[in-house]
Picture (cartoon, rainbow, N blue to C red):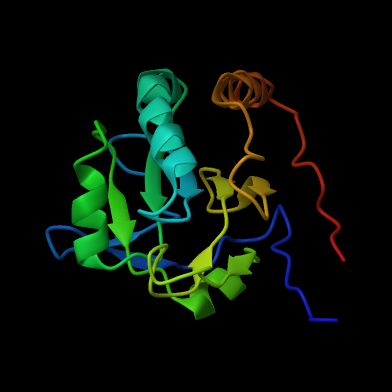
Length: 178
C-alpha cells in the first residue's frame, strides 16, 4: 500500500508554480484577471482527448465564473512542445501552464499514472484534478479523479460556487481528511 497525501479543505493551498508558454511563471493558486477566487484544472496532457474536450468546454464557462469572481487556470506535466501541440486543438483564453512536477503532483494529492506506451507520452502524468481556492488562499473545494472520464460537470460546479459565494455563512465542507 502506498501512502497518500490529501489536501485538507480549509487549509492554505500550497504555492504551486508552473510555466506559461511565454516563459513566465504562474502561481496556480493565485486568482487573476480581477477575480478573488481561483479554479485550477489539472489535466492529463496532450495525449488525452477527453482533457482537450474538457478544457475547451471550460472556456464556455469562463465568463460565468468571472461573473462570480473566480478566475481559471489549467496545468499538466507536459513539456513546452507538448503544450504547443495541444494548443492547436484548444480555443481557450485562460492561462494554461506546463511542467507540473511529480513532487507537485504528490503535494496536491493527485493520482499519478505512467504512460502505457511512448505513443501516449514520455513521462508520468497527473490524472484530473479540480481545485477551488478562496479569497484568503484556502482550499474551498477539491475534486480528484484517477481517470479522465470521472470529472465534475462544469455547469454544476459553476452553480455550486455561485451558491456558496452568495451565502455569508456557508462553511467550507470536508475539513477532516485521513
